[in-house]
Length: 297
Image: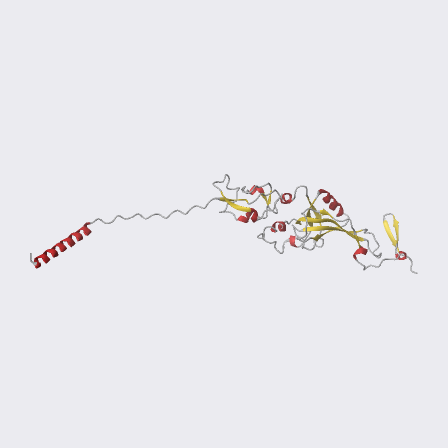
């Protein structure tokens, strides 16, 4: 076969193949559309409730370090429990437990009593202790330097007689420390400071609140016998509070003071000791008292 014939035949075969391929492409059905994959549903957050991080006892003040979140499968009563998606971790801080709580046991609203609610101070009191409210003043309570939660010494200041001659010197005054290391539960009706010691996020009292300006009563945590002693002492003199430092050693229990009595002559040398011839004579006429001064030479 001649060369031109061979080339002509090869060209015809190439054209026939190209035409067949083009026809196949044009006659092929369109590709099936792939269905779009729906986005994965957002994973639901695990249910978690507030539980005790350690064993807690009744009357214990709660802070956020004593609580933690724990995941659970279900809740018997969602209204009673503190849930992670609805409450904050420090929701129970500043409250007092009514009953014991084991580590890992869920906390419920009925287990807590908060400052200002009925029964708060009763829940704070330790077993065997009593809460005694005493009348006081801004001076006797150190003009606001003493707050609920502080520890103090209780001092009785006494004037021996209200019928003394004002010109008689020196006046009969004395003081004695009755109790030491006593915990203050409340000033007036405010226990805010007692709870804020463990929860710094509690709002501070407003500057114009009555509790920040007036001091009518102070409530102390004492034993029954100490309560009787203070109740009697307040009838004969003025009770004052001496603030103790936080670094003072002690076991947290109130102790009796010393039997020592500080008299005016031991406290100051301002008054001169009167000589026997300068003291007035006291005359009792029924319910009246009369002072007769000695005649001047």
